[in-house]
Image (cartoon, rainbow, N blue to C red; front, side, top):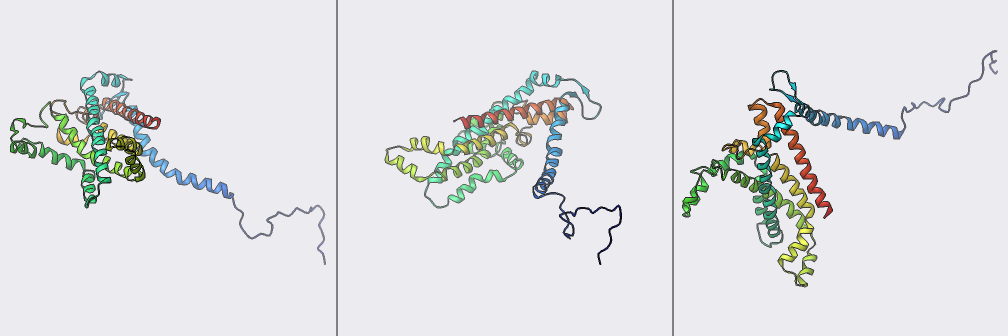
Length: 315
């Protein structure tokens, strides 16, 4: 028997999911993927902003204040930048950093190209050992290397003893305490450290160059220099750019090596921007000047590396 329909009660249309026991999805598949992507990116972005962008913004803000790190800061506008560009000691620090680029980047690149060519093409036993020895400075902490080299450069150290042993005692000196040799001595430590990294990077690039290129060039009468200039150099252009980028950054921001070996001395002959940031902020109590110096150093590093990469892409 059919139930009677009560007056005033209209029949409602049936939903397409009526009677379906499965729960309805709040988001479709595409929207769900978008939400998951946002959630996965949120934590890295939060960490990056908290530990990278916020400190950068804080340093930029402090560069416009005169502050000793304890009391209340005073807004001074661009005076800290004017002081940085008018202070001979601070400008000298940038000049020393540019000189260190020669020792950290240019010389290691030249030496690394020769070493990488020899170690990659040479047919001899024990190449793995030589490669490990060349790369060894990269796996030792810079502070340890600096202490070791400070002993080598000491008046009674290995270098002076070697010079006396071969009859060149007149050349002995306090290498890290002499105004004329201190910066060069520090730079040569950087050369020794960087050469291993550059050599390993270049060896990776050279090993990927097909041997057919060298064999064809040899059949055409090309000598060692022409093969090196026309095949090897273009073949490792990407590795050269990476090497220059890493070593130039290392030269400009070096701190631990200078701090341990010379502390910027004698006088100001080996002071560099990173060391001056520490000196101005924690020794002289001029946090504003240190912050302006740090901002300028960051911009210099960015500009030089951008120039290197643009020139590399153009060639």
